[in-house]
Amino acid sequence: MVVGSDGARTIVNHTPVHLFHDTPGFGEVAADAVLVAGRGAGGTAAGLERARHLGVPGVVDVDRRPPGDELATMFDLATHLLFGEDAAAAVASTDDPTVALRRIAGETEALVAVTCGEQGVWWREAGGSSDVQWQPARSIDAVDTTAAGDVFHGAFALALAERMPTSDALGFAAAAAAIKCTRHGARDGIPTRGEVEDLLVSPSEGH
Image 1: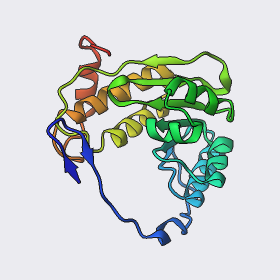
Image 2 (image 1 turned 135 degrees about the horizontal axis):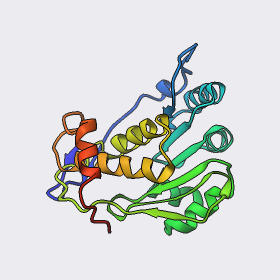
Image 3 (image 1 turned 90 degrees about the vertical axis):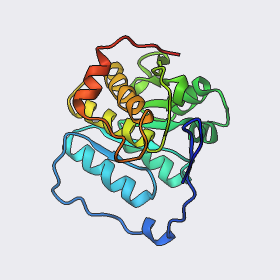
Image 4 (image 1 turned 120 degrees about the vertical axis):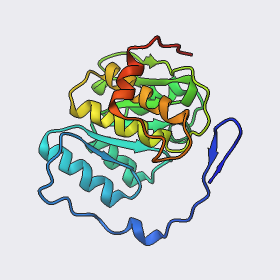
């Protein structure tokens, strides 16, 4: 991993292909929300099916264009699909996040969001019951964006588990990710709940 002077990171990795062939067993695991990374059709389906069985949110972090079968599984089983900007562009064949959002939302009953870093996040409620909405990002001086997306998705899933409305859940997630970006390190930079709540009551400077 390389972190630039502007805080942006580049990750170079190699993941053995066989890791995506094993489907994890969720058994009788109880949860108030389920978050899956969307890498491997078996694991994605198992996690989302467990969420559906429990009647809780099934959230997918979509950070790349999934294969067709995996994408179909997400569309069918997820309640919340959070696309990274590049993944949305690849799936919807457009660089405009709002156009991509509308195209993707037309294929699923799930809530669909497209996260665009410092530009904020666009989303549309489940079932196309509303027009596209926008949550601004907070103005920060980023030093390390490593794991910002993971923090965002984890905080969003937590907020859903606590039954926050979508706009509040996205705001909570954005605050958590913003704090992370002001600190070095992936795990070391994760904020506490108290730090996120303190930021939420401070003035917000959106883009």
